[in-house]
Structure formats: C-alpha cells, structure tokens
Length: 251
Image 1 (cartoon, rainbow, N blue to C red):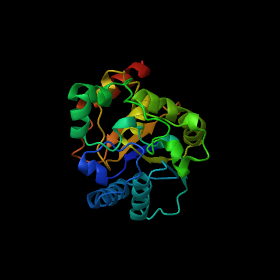
Image 2: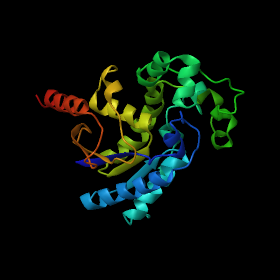
Image 3: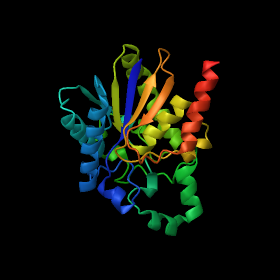
C-alpha cells in the first residue's frame, strides 16, 4: 500500500480577511505559520513517511510545505511544483471580500459560484492584471491554457492530467506522497478519489493545515482516510460517502 497525504496550506492573510484569493499570491498569516508547524508535528507523531512532495506555484502552499518538512526533519525530500495544483481561479471575484461580492452580485449567486460543481464566476478580461497570462510566473505557458475564472469542475479538469501523468506513476512505484495545495484543488482530488457526486461535493470542506491520510490499495483505490486533527471539519457525510464507496468496490 502507498500513503497519500494531502494538506491544505495554513491560513493566509486573505483567508483571515475572507477574500476570494484564487491565484493571488498572498502570504501565510502568523496563525497560518503556526498551523503549518503543527501539521508537521502531527505527521511526525503519526510516523508518516514522505518520499516525494508536490505543491503549487503559490507561496502560501510552498511556505506551508517548507515549514512542514522542516518540522519533520525532512528538508531533503524532493519537491515538485506545478501550476496545475494552484487554487481555483475565482475570476472577477478575486480580491473581493465575501461581503463586497454579495453586494455586487447578490448572496444567492455568490453562494452558487462557491458551492455548485459546474458554476464558474464571471471571467476576467485577458487585459486584467489578475489574469495569470499577465504574470511573469506563467510566461512559459500558453495564455489559452490559463484560466480567466474556474468552477470546481474546471479546476479538477486542469488538475487530472497532472494526477494521471505525474503523481500516479510515483504512487504505483510505492512512493509515499505528500501534496500541499489548496482548498479546491484538493476538494477536486477528493471527489475523484472517492467518486463523490457533483451534488455531494458541496458538503465537503477542508480545514487549513489539516493533514488527511489516504491508504491506497494496489489499484490506487482508497481503503481508508484519516484526518489527524481531532477538530477536523471534514463532514461526517463525507466519511459516510467513502464508507459506502469502499463497500461497493469490495463486493
């Protein structure tokens, strides 16, 4: 069996301000730094092995991973960064607080953009400074590959080729993998791994810096999932979904 550990970054300064962050490259807040160190302590106490790490291009995830590895005395473990692990791009919502967005678009519409699997926010113009094509960090990519705004469905579609082409081969070789990424890129992965429906994924929330451990069988199907923080807010409903899925594939 391989172990896949997924970890949302520690709380950022925009999480604290309740802003739609998306691809905006903000830093960890002081509490987010403490959360990341605590996540490393939890992983060490559990004896979790890490052979290879993956993270996004965004500093809040990169810094969280660095703090986790430093805390675990695993700074030598290889890290691969990829833009496809970035957070969902929130389009024209990016940078707005939740209250600013609801004042502009209405609470019902904003909630639909947040919760519905296939509901992209208003797209950015390519001339907008928030469009990734205007950021030198993504200059090596074609502008047509870069999002102007994404639904969770779009985020998952962007991530899955990386999962299949890069991460799965490493898991197949028996490597224990740590992925430090973002709320929606990780929710998309959970949806894929556990076969969660488009409707049910709306009930899944992942706390910042809450390590989640999957044990995978030889077919890379989850046989268990454990959160290391006792106060985890991953819903019991999600645990039930995984239990039902495991029962079906075991028949």
